[in-house]
Amino acid sequence: MATALAVAGGYQDTGRDAGRELRRIVRINEEIKSIVATAFKINLMAMNAIFLAKRAGQSALGFGVLSNELRRFATDLQRQMGALREAIYSSASTVTEVVKESRVLRILERARRESQGPGRAILDDHLRRRLADREADARQARVNALDRRLRQMLADTTQLVELGSVLARSAKIEAAYGGGFNTALMQVSSDFEQTIAEIQRSLENLARR
Amino acid sequence: MKKTEVIFEEGSHKWYAIVRDPSRPDYLIDTNEYLVTVGDEALLLDPGGSEIFPAVFSAVSAQFDPRKIDRVFASHQDPDIASSLSMWLEFNPELKCYISWLWTSFVPHFGGNKDTFIPIPDQGMDIQLGGVRLQAIPAHYLHSSGNFHLYDPKAKILFSGDVGAALLPPTESGLFVEDFDRHIRHAEGFHKRWMGSDRAKRDWCARVSRLDIQMLCPQHGAIYRGADVGRFIDWFSHLEVGSLGT
Image (tube, rainbow over all chains, first blue to last red; front, top):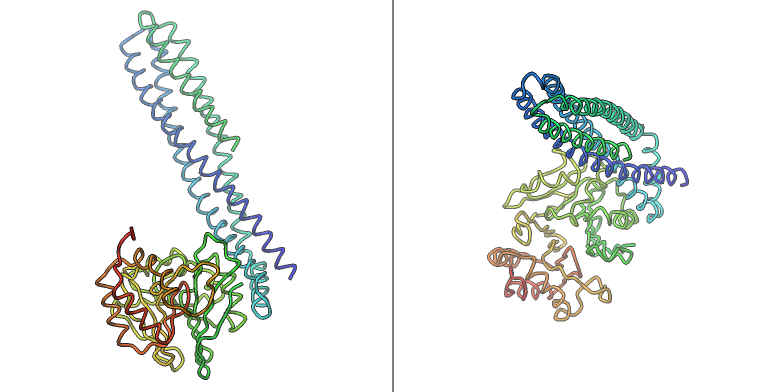
């Protein structure tokens, strides 16, 4: 029956899409793991920078303020990454359902092709009822909504990291006024800049996925 | 497509063997499924893996309304035995699966829920099908630690799961064992490697020797009948199992 065949064909496409989506989610999750590790590194670096600024005293007041801000940025970034991870988990479980569903339908369609007589009629009827079932559509809508949410969260994270980049650049300028601590402060602020650039590259990778 | 052969028939009491799938990909082991019917009641034995579901479904539906299959018997938990469970549940969500109690929380990973499984206690149990009383016979550690065979005293058939299995070359596709000595060479390596316990093997041989068996139906390979049943039990009782076969 052409209709049942078309339905099953449609589910096969959905299955392939869902499979791709699942692989994309895995790749995003791996990238998030590396950003979380880097954010933790920034947090430690900021703490050291705060101590250094305290030792430098009056000449590194501005640097100290920026180090505090960078520490807050690292904490915000870690929190944001935690939320992204939760969103990824929700997406993975929904997409897994779609993958499972499309596998069942692929097998049913193969059974339909191989069956004759009453067996084929039973499968035609079963696949037709599947068409009437809106649950699959609802599941796909949930996948799309989760994907939109994920993209929005990534955009928010990019904005947050842009702020971190500005803070790191400002810290570099403030380091120039560090008197005797000038070289050490410059080294720390360059490290901030490089580490945040690493995160930006990871986010660019995420945006491409 | 798989072949369906009636191997026993007495009134409405029938045993169907669903065997040999020439279109099966060569990376999948070939399996036999059996359907026991009494009137409108049906029990599917080791329904098979999900990848071969289309072949089994089409073969079964040519003989029997698959929607009427409301019970399956799984000898153990392997994927080639029970991973098609979710597909059979598509047609009958109320379907029940008899399986060793050991696996009732493992096999739901293939499909089903807490209401799907009927746990078989270690000592076995009777399963009533129409007016026929079938018996789940313990075969633990052969090869699975929670393993059952199914005996039909009326048909004198023992469904023996992996015991008696042979990995046959494509040239030997007969339904029944015709030349025991020739056939058993294809069973030897399998039994040595898959069957892990000599004690369990001896227990099983003693247990089934007390049954009146006309046909011993394994999940892989050809069916033993008549004198070959006794020959097989004797051969198995002398075989050293649980070895790597080196």
